Image (cartoon, rainbow, N blue to C red; front, side, top):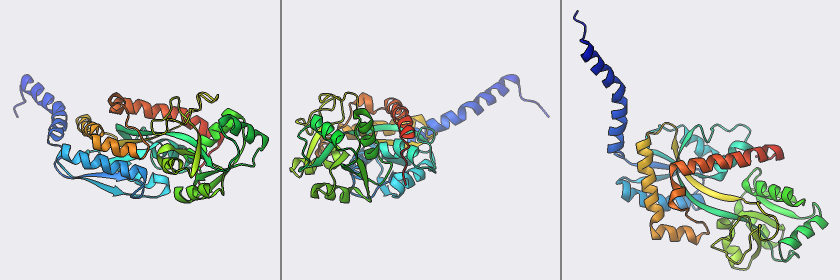
Length: 331
């Protein structure tokens, strides 16, 4: 049997090493060749779903393939997120989630079945919404300083609505309590709608909420807002002061939305998806629809996979130790 010449052997060996790389490149160049599924772990009509649909509609024009929304709901968004984490890493399954699915739930659910940094690759930061403190109109304090004084004078008497247990609203409220030395009771609700209805009706006193989720009742005068939990005033409600302005600096909470793909998705595919998302977020019609529900599209340099990955990691490093120390758990 004739053995291969050394030069021929080296050529074959080099081919064996480069063929997977060339295969990835070839797949990326032809990607996408069929429809893409975008998993949204919430029901139709909520903020994450509306944002995903606006982005998906624009992406199909850029990518040349349909981007089909699949709503996979349950357990605070974790059921759909698990489905997305287990999908093939080929760029044909995208996952849209938020700070709840990719920071809060992995820290508060006792038997979570995914690890947000290990099971996903970041594609883009889609939008952000500041958190704020809202209240029923009949609550006596007129501003945050009066509210803090009133809460201290009436420990554990005030009530704050929250959706379920272990969510960002409870985390934000607990964070505020620790920063201000106040105490009040949390009242869990089965959904955002009944929580908001009871707040408007005056059955509970307060709510820590994303501006995007409660801008309409504040604008209509059904509720009042005390402060935005951010370092800058929020564009959608510029008349509301920041918590820094009102004497409790650094008490910042942000609700944000992002897009991911399963771990090991080829980098060229991620780059193509990131570019398509950037085009969608630059479209004036998309930007207006996002602004209409109180969210804001981040600058282009904050949307990239690298910037979003670093931001996501920083959010986990900020909130996981706090959640553990405060013993906040989802039930």
